[in-house]
Amino acid sequence: MSIRLDRYLAESGFYTRREASKLIRAGGVSVNGVPLRDPAEKIPEDAAVTAEGRELGFRRTRWIMLSKPAGYVSTTEDDPKSVMKLLPEQLRRVGLFPCGRLDIDTTGLLILTSDGAAAHNLLSPRHHCEKVYSFTCLPIGEEQRHKLEEGVELSDFTSAPCRVEMKDPEHGEIVLTEGKYHQIKRMFQAVGSEILTLERIRFGGVPLDPSLAPGEWRELTEEEISLLTEPRTKKG
Ligand code: URA
Picture 1 (spheres, helix red, strand yellow):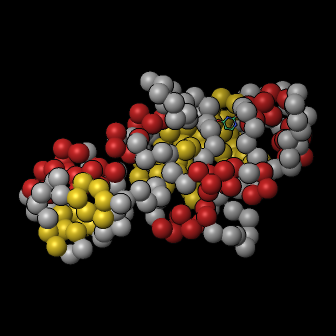
Picture 2 (picture 1 turned 90 degrees about the vertical axis):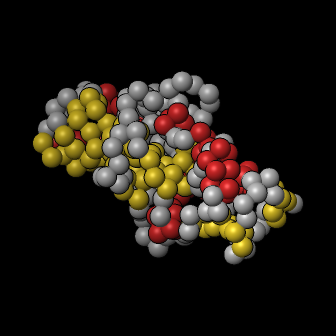
């Protein structure tokens, strides 16, 4: 299969078609080591393409870390409030799935991948992938904290045992390996409290990058991708 050079660059997710054409004409793109200047030139899909010194891969699997702000929903549908609106247009076309949903008012780490099988695997309860959330809540005492850790009975299921560490009666962190609808909010309601703010700060072994402001994103590093995709020797 062959593909136009400008489309290859656009499909890589790094450039719009217009940026790609400009860059190609300026001599910034080489294919198999040879600079090409015609955006319409057809190249094999498996060619080695370098643009501005960066190796691009056509339809390579994409892994994105997004710092989700409040007010956005984690769906891929064409909703004006979709987290996809925070990504550049060319990245919205590579088939990203969010690894687990966050409520509209929940902030923090959202991982998106174009590897549907990996996303499914990470979300499977058998995978025991830890998700860590920092929260503020109506004050709770030791007895309520203990109940949350043991597992609480909700209308449709009983939450699995988990870890809850309190910094003070209104601030803490909770580590879950499951992710049911509104789970944390419902767990706190079940013990007579209420979640006031909720932020996901870690997904598996990958923490939220503190340099990302809400609404900003970056690609995962190779190391972070391995932490999510390679068989683990310990929980994380
Ligand atoms: N639990 C919730 O209640 N909301 C989230 O967004 C994530 C976990």
